[in-house]
Image 1 (cartoon, rainbow, N blue to C red):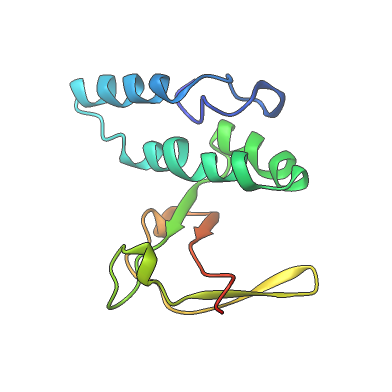
Image 2 (cartoon, helix red, strand yellow):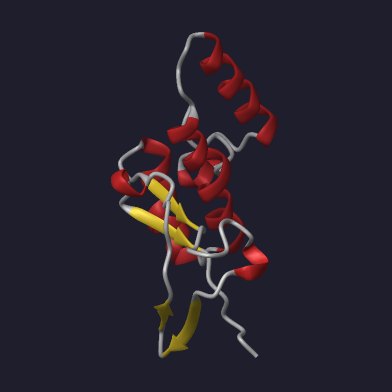
Length: 126
């Protein structure tokens, strides 16, 4: 129950609210555990997938995130803009049934361990 408890039960999660994650993180801090790695996966990345992912993506990835089989990262920070999402320059343009991403990212949180990376990019550049 420590990984991704907010994931709906039909994908292997517990269907709990974000308050549960906050309690888990607080308790981990009491015993000296560093919740950052699982907190990134459970508190940030997984919620984007739950809210915005296609049904196919949810079925493929959510059970793996809950079990810990797949580790996530988030690529947000860019050279010259930091983590100011209004200033990002990375773009994602639709090309058939996929996107072509063009840009640079730095300080990719959990990137060295990741199997799946959430990339922040602009899709409407007009």
